[in-house]
Image (cartoon, rainbow over all chains, first blue to last red; front, side, top):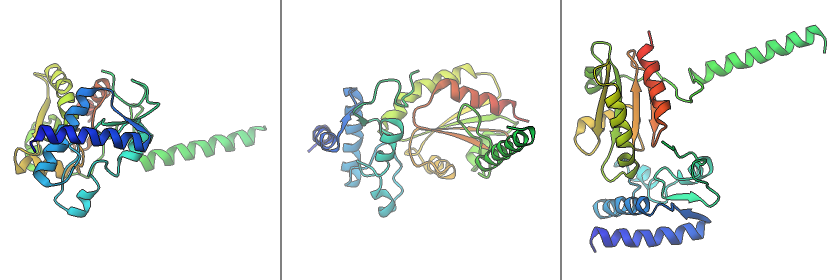
Amino acid sequence: MDVDEKAKKIKEWAKRYAEKRGVRLNPDEERVDEVAKGLAVRQEKFGRRYCPCRIITGDTEEDRKIICPCVYQEEELKKFGMCHCKLFRVKESVEGVSGESED
Amino acid sequence: MNQRTSIRYVAIIATVCLLSVGITGCINQAGYEFKGGITPPKAVSDLMKNNRTVVLFVTQNNCPTCEQVKPKIAGLQAQYRGTNVTFAHFNINDNATSFNVAKAYSVTATPNTIVIRKDGAAAIFVGDFDTGTLKSAVEDARQWK
């Protein structure tokens, strides 16, 4: 399976996860595709779906925390209305008032 | 409320405010904070020579927010061309130096934009940022004596 196919599968998984979790995917499809590709590249390289916006330390236990959905996303969703990578957003999140920079 | 009670309330509020400032450090209204206690690695201290203010932009490959923020950094860099502000981009996937710079500033997520004052204190912006706020931090760093 090449990276693009993997990214497609990850995007499908992310949709299912968001539904199950009561959140939503970023309505910006391009952003979702970019994150899915980043996750696919890392899955291919490291065997795990590590968040493309976080740094892999090499410490297996520590790095477990950044496998998407990472341990930080819950707090980020509460605090900013979206996760750091902007893949998941809270359902009631409104453009421009959820901590996302406008400029 | 008599005058003595009023004075007591004012004293209590002032004490709480002073303690808050002491605990949180130098957080300004914009929300960024210059923190000391970080020894800049050689790659950064070289950039700081001649009393220069330094802005580090730490990224990694396949990081969508890094790509999104790049034009903002480029715009700011253009505004500061010819001044005492140095912009430096470190992609942690490029080499060990970049990785060590990220490590020195405890970077765990990217992008990280780090404004470094002449004394080495750093204000760290994680992820996307408001350009105006970052510019305020750069100005604060430039004017710091």
